[in-house]
Image (tube, rainbow, N blue to C red; front, side, top):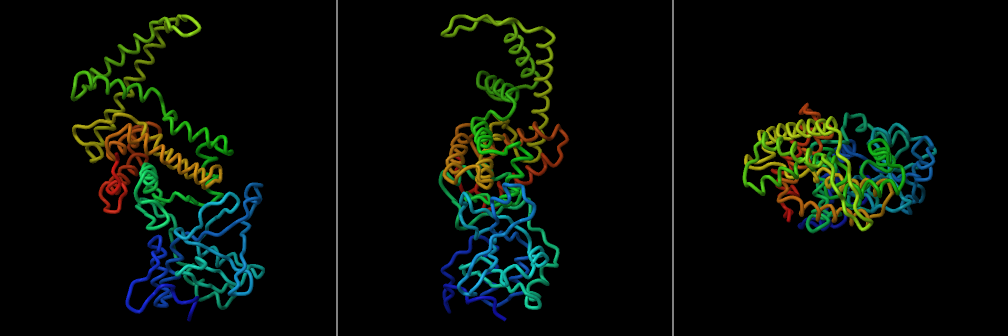
Amino acid sequence: MSFGPSPAGLGPLGPPAWIPPTEIEQTLFEAKSREDWATYFAKLAENRLYFEIRRDKVDSGADGRYPVFAHDSRTGGPVWAVYTAGMLPAPEPNRVFDWSTLKWFARVWVPTDPPVIVVNPNSPCEAFLPTIPPHSAAWAQYSQRENNPDPNMRLRTLRVGGPLHGPVAHGLACGALLCVNNGSWWNAMAWHGTGYPNERKRLREWWGITTREEWLSALSGLLECESHSGVWEFALRLRRTIARDFGGHVDAGYWRQAAASVIRANSEGSVVVTDDGATKTEPRPESETEARIEGVQRLIGRITRYEARMRADGVLDETRYVSSVDAWDLGRASKMARWGLGARFGTLPEAESAVIRAGHSAARSYRSWQDFSAGYILGRCLHFDDEEFGEWYTDMVDAHRILMTDPGSPWLNIPFR
């Protein structure tokens, strides 16, 4: 049985000249080279299969997927082209993709669809799958297997097609905690992610973003580190000041007292001089001041308890503390740039520029990947976890451990500064 031409570049003695972008294409290539179609189809069944769809239909809110079929001169007619993650073309404004599983393709085919599915067209791991029964049975039987095309808590790297070193790779690595947690490719700059409809849905449901202008605003806020609470930074900045002035460890009790003193001093009113003259600010009511003090002191308690847990879990060294939670914004900025590209709110050059900027800002704010990670985890937990130490915390600790130990991790191969 044959499902396509022999793999290109496979010599009788030497290795193939072609470098598969991921282990998915590696397996497909090797299986095809030995005509092991059982392994080939099983690998397809385990992973997302992307296909081109009509953007105008998605944008109009029309139900259905509306695939775009291609013409292949080798078959002399229409084909349904599908791609594994490493073989997707670079994003274009009006060419978008969705994804599904092999099971879905076997289930939804109708006689008006093309008679052939082409996997990774014009590549060494290409295969032609007949869609008309009974010929389709050769591959459709594998679609009935249970599969999980969304493996989480896994470091995934593009061998080609994604930067491994340099400023773009550094900026992409700032989003690696989320990539590992979601099982996405940490160095995928040409982002398709979960497909055009799902990337739009992600931004709409989690961020309220439905337009390019809203995406640009959200991205700017993250890059400027303005998307988390200023109270968090006030507390952490105060501790940095105390540590710089007095050196070494900062006692939590002294930190709380210092916060109270600063808040009271700032609440007494002052004279502000500007180009337009002097403006006097009135003192804040005592009840408001005391409420602010109580809130910040509770926050200090939360921070110290999270840091204690992070030290116990190996995220923070014994002598270190979190200097800032800017990493929470910068890590999300690295991802927001790509999410906007996947949703076609931005272009590849815009996304790349934002990723580089996130990396530069991270290097100015932190000393190491470990420090950056601790800042990100603390910010995420202050926002979501409410001291439950649930999945908002444990998932990030698991991702942190992978990134700090896996030999292929960008955190072990890209200098932080």
